Length: 415
Image (cartoon, rainbow, N blue to C red):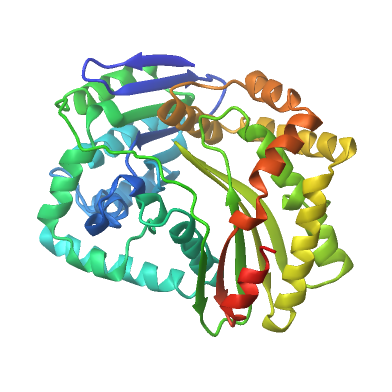
């Protein structure tokens, strides 16, 4: 993959695959909810919405019509670490669509009327999330384990913070965070290289380098219990354990262990709780890796009358896992992880996204061979060492939403 840096610091990744008929591209900004002050909660996500409300040369309707004419996909999302604006189009429309995307990011109108309209949309989005037990439990878990830190706050913000933003606030936030050194372009597929670079230079290359406000302090893992009583049909429960940060090479071993625990249909938790006992609707485990912070989580959705039994069985499975994993389980999890990595890299959108994320967050790009080698290198001893370090039951965090048990019950799970 070709790597280019413009004079102002904007980075560009290009992978031309001429026999494809489409191109996928994105503009990634190293700015997410972790970069917000408490009073700015949700500003990154609000700003993402405003980028689609028009520029000096295009109205919001123009953007929608042109996007449909391109016959592809134009969208965006905000995470805790970054914001991504992306498109996937036929190659014939790639340069035109890319130019529109660059125009949207470098010249948003930010009209007061548009801010008011979009505020209502985002408040509805927040309300929708609050109607989901799984989403509520996830926000509770992050708030518990990273208490007081921006990583623990919801990406959407709160109704109070979102209601407070003005067009001037969002413009100020844009100027302070969308600096050239934090912008990365990733393009993959069939496209005209010189035209793409010309567009980058005309739009992104003219951004003036400036000192932004980018604090990324590292939060400590906090043992906590966060509960929200609500009349959901099923309760959502999450158990959180100390994980490994993005920059730790051993996170692959912990990811493999998480897969063995509850990452697939043959996993210990799925087989015991779902297949053998029929206690839960769903059960899973996964790792979350941020710069400087990590988390391993086990989640289940369960009817209230089966919750106590389901959690007791979950703890039994995890305690057995902490003592022993078989070589067969390790091999099976490795093969599944490798298959997912390789298959994911076969799509141009996945290739563009994977390269952008690793370059933006780790300042490196992984090839398929590099990823496979990292997985293959994990030994059973290494896996068990990382599993035992993570599964510290006395430090376990609990988050739950639904018709719940007493706080004392969840506290007793740590015994």
